[in-house]
Image (cartoon, rainbow, N blue to C red; front, side, top):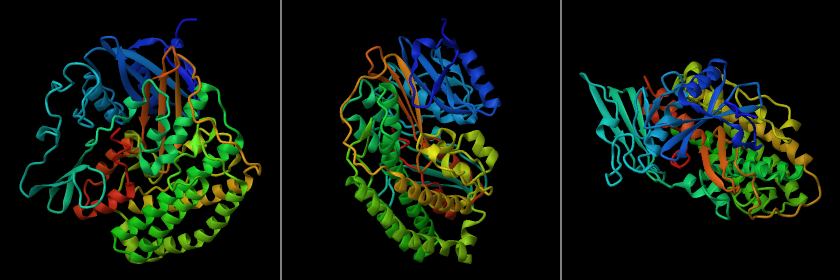
Amino acid sequence: MSPAPFLPVECARPAAMDSLAVSDWEECRAAVLEDMAAGGRLTALFGRPAGSETEIHTVTHCPPDKVFRWRRARIGRSFAALTPDCPAAQGFEREIAEQWGAVPEGHPWLKPLRYHRGYAPGRDAWGRSPDEPILPAVGDFYRVAGDGIHEVAVGPVHAGVIEPGHFRFQCNGEEVLHLEIALGYQHRGVETALWKGWNKRTLPYMETLAGDTSVGHATACCRLLEGLGGRMPSLRSRIIGAIALELERLANHAGDLGALANDVGFLPTASFCGRLRGDFLNLTAALCGNRFGRGLVRPGGLGIPVESATLQRVRQRLEEIWPDLAGAVDLLWTTPSVRARFSGVGKLEASTAGRLGIVGVAARACGIARDVRRDFPTPVDERLAWEPPTHLDGTVHSRAWIRWMECAISRDILRHLLDGAEAAPEPAAEDRPFPLAPASVAVSVVEGWRGEIVHLVITDPAGQLAHYKVVDPSFRNWIGLAVALRGQQISDFPLCNKSFNLSYCGHDL
C-alpha cells in the first residue's frame, strides 16, 4: 500500500509513520487550508530535522470527526507562510523560523518567538550566527508615531514574584493602541530534554512544565505513553486521575476569581477565594501527598495508591468548602461596582478568537463551545452528561463568569466521580519505561484548566521518543490578550491580564 497524503490519528492511539507520505509543502499547505475552510482547526504545526532539510508536520482536526489529520512535507530555507490565510499559525511559524532557520515567506510580522538558540546548524531565519546575542531588538516591536503617542514598557522583571515577560504599550493618552508581548526569557529546553526518552525524568519534566497545570500535562503525557505502549489503566485509575484534574481546575479558577476581585479592589471575595484555593489544593494533597498532584498520574495507572477512605474524606471536605466559595463569588455578581468594572472591558470578538485559535476559558467566553472533555471523551468522560458553558460578550465579565460556571460543573463532575470510584484499593503503577510502538506518531489532548493541552510524539525505529512537541494553551492565547487590550485604558491591563491568566513557563518551553 502506498503512503497516504495524511494519516488519520485517533486520540492517544499510535499510527505507523511509514503510512504517511512526504508531500510537497504547497500541497500540504493547500490541504490544511481546505480543512480550515471546512470548519477545522490547526492543532499543531512544528518542524524537525530531515538530513539537510527541515520536515514540517501539520496536525489538524475537523469536527465532528474524532481523528486528527497528520501531514508532513519537506522544505529548504524558506516556505510559503500559512499565517496570512490561517492566523492561528502565526506562533507556530515563528517557532519554526527560530528553531530550524526556515523563513515563512509572507508571514505578516516575522520575529523570534522565544529568543533562544535554534537547533539547526548555521544562521537562523534572521541571519544571526550562533555567537551573536539573542535579545529583543528595537525592530521587533511595532511602533506608532504621531502627536500624543507615547510608549510604556513593563518588565521583563516585575514587582511581584512572577516569571519574566515584557509588555510594550503604544498609547494615545490613556488609550492602548497596540500591546506587544515578548516572552521566552528562561530557555528551559523541556522539549529537547524529552527526545530520546522516555526515562525517569520524563514525568517530572511534565509536572513542572507549567507548575499550576501539573496534573493536566502529566495526564496528556501518560495517555500518549499508554497508547504507544498498549498499557491501558483501569477505570478506577482513570477516575482518580480525572478527580485530580477537576480539583486542579477548581483550585485555579477559585484563585483567579479572587485575583480578579483583588484587581478591582474588592477585598471580601479576594480574601475568601485566596484561602479557598488553598483548600482545594489541600484536597489534591489528600489524594497523593502533593498539593499540585505530582507523583499521582503515571503511565498505566497511579503512582500512589488511593484508598476508598481517602476518596470519602475528599468528598466530605468538598461539600464543606463549596458553600464558602459560592457565597464569596456571589458577591461579585451582586456588587454593582464590581460588575461595572468587569463589564465592557477587554473585549475579544468571537470571529477574532476563532481565527487566532484561542482555546479554553477565553474561547468559551466568546461563545465558542469547545472542550476536549466533550469533543474527545475518555471512558470516564463518556459517563458524564454536561455541556461546556459559553458567554457571548468576550469581556472580563464573560471570562470571570465562565470560570464560575466551570467551578460549578467541576463540583458536579467531582461528586459523580467520587461516588462512582470502585471501592477496592489499587496497586501503584510501575514507574519505569515500557516498550513503545516503533516508528509511530501519536497525539494526546486534555482539557486543562486554561484550555486545550496538546502533546505530540514521533518514535524512532527503536521505540524511543525521537521528537516530542507540547502546545500549552498559553501558547495560543497570549495573542488574544494583546488583541483584547486594543482600545482599552492602560489602567485596565492588570484586570485584562488576570482574566486570561496565562502562563509564562507554559510558553517558554
